[in-house]
Image (cartoon, rainbow, N blue to C red; front, side, top):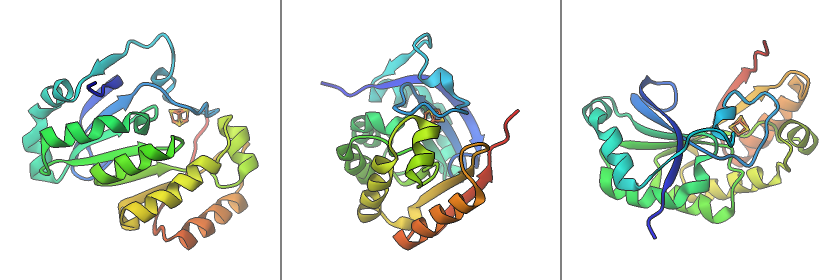
Length: 204
Ligand code: SF4
């Protein structure tokens, strides 16, 4: 059966925001987490209109920017929602687009472990939204246990070059502290992660 990618939105011509060069962001519908300050609730809201693309349909949709991708070293970023839920889609999509496009994922890694190995075989780079490595912080902020994400990050490091993994470490008002974040950073550096993006959530 052909894998499909349930898609909540597609955003073209993005410049160095979620990958190198010019990218098209393809937002998956569906997410196992329920982050308190989620800005993308439409990616898991039941009322969102979802289009289920086959690899050929998505390739036909995004390839009009192929020249931009190839000229700038960009490509397609699968975000969401949680794109790795649909990792089985990636091999067929890669077969269509070849190696001239970069394929990225923005992910929480909160997915079954077999999805990690499938994605690692096909995608070029990962932007990992790890939230926080403290179990209590993760649970209270996302509503889920954080051990899956951390175990999957360890798994991913064994399957791909750690230099191809950027980990985002937010300061989350009301949920973690600078001390928590320093603790997370120390754990990540010990794991071999060097590309760490620290930033603050701005709550309006
Ligand atoms: S992982 Fe992302 S999409 Fe999912 S609930 Fe959290 S912020 Fe929203």
